Amino acid sequence: MRLFLSDDAAAVACGADRVARRAAALGFEVVRTSSWGMHWLEPLVELDTGSGWIGYGPVLPDELPALLAGELEEKRVGELAAHPFIARQQRLTFARAGMTRPLALDDYAASGGWEGLRRARELGPEAIVEEVKTSGLRGRGGAGFPAGIKWNTVRLAEGPRKYIVCNADEGDSGTFADRMLMEGDPYCLIEGMAIAALAVGAQKGFIYVRSEYPHAIAKLDAAVRLSVSIVAPFEVEVRVGAGAYVCGEETSLLNSLEGKRGEVRAKPPLPAIEGLFGCPTVVNNVLTLAAVPWILAKGGQAYADYGTGRSRGTMPVQLAGNVRHAGLFETAFGLTLGELVYEVGGGTASGRPVKAVQVGGPLGAYFPPALFDTIFDYEAFAARDGLIGHAGVTVFDDSVDMAEQARFAFEFCAAESCGKCTPCRLGAVRGRETMERVISGDDPAVNLALIEELCETMKFGSLCALGGFTPYPVMSAITHFREDFVG
Image 1 (cartoon, rainbow, N blue to C red):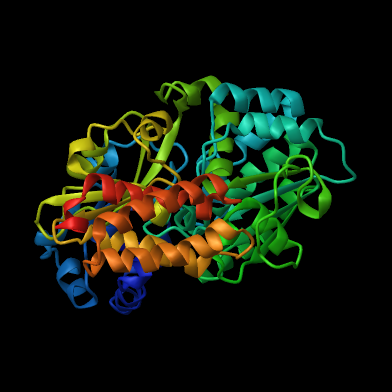
Image 2: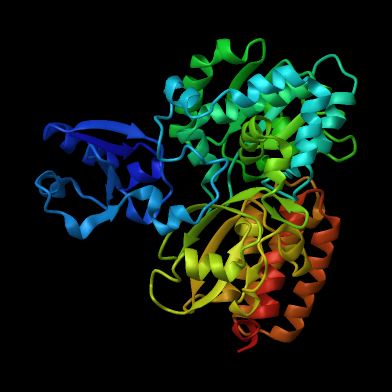
């Protein structure tokens, strides 16, 4: 009997390798696949019953004999594709998640892989860029800048060489979509980079991966090697970062790639004009580039038909923290934050009331339940002083102390600052010290006013988003949960 089991790092962390070894010893034919993204059910196994694949989870190694005997009905999930968590999604970027072997070229081709690249080769550079513009695809990791405009800038720029740089330095807490894509569907990323290279005339691409992702690095290295003839003459190289959060900022990343200190560059010049080694460079994150093969294969308008307003297409939302159904949920823009937290996420894992949700990683704003009617799109979040960022949604129950969370935001910024600009380098330290005085009850009203003034300086005076976005969690916590600061 065949047993399908993910080799995703989250599944492995929950014991998937131990389950695989025990299953093999019991006579199962074990097939390692990508992850469905239903992390609360890991280790999640599927049995090929001959009439369909039936999921069970979470399954422990000692429960496998009962599974083999058909006596593990309490862990039966049913057909995973029909599970409400999966069936409600619009999976475009993660269309193969859970259903293919990550490094199997035949699996990738059989599920539509390389179709976008073939069409891109027929269209040519200008038409490729027009398809991406039509799709409305925006950067899936930061401020949401239109990908087509960035690509066109690089296409028209003059330079001795041009580069495609994939920002895979996924450092935000509560985010894991990049890792899942690199581990589970690496050819999709490589194909997206190859299409971008055709669009702008690049000969070389780099994938800059954080060192904390050893499984992803191994998968990418293997995938690059196995697909080298398919994407030629475009060449892809995997580079490993050294653990600096600030290297998630594009100019710091470029400095690091060049062998320099990972610190922010002043802009202009923009990387699209003068990027890696002084040459025109496309810098996009994993989810942006991985959306491109579907867009080229199906057409830009087909992608734009998903979403709402200026937020087109789909977003892989990552549900984490104190949430019952933690995992990856890809959906078209347009659901409300409340729908994601309660209907999709199932509320808190602790069973206590939700107090706050932080969207966009450690520099994202905190939203109270009173704002859960906020539509999940770029403009709706910006209108309420928030940001989607990488779409990490971290849930907190009513036991959280929001003053401590605000202090942590300053502490995090102080630890990760590259030190190049004064507002970030000194502001974060002074902010942490001032917040500690607030928490200790030392004239909180005066010190909170000082923090608000400091946040204004950091927001508008910092060179990059690390210092510029730190005020978002701090000020949202003070605004919406003031009782935790002055109570």
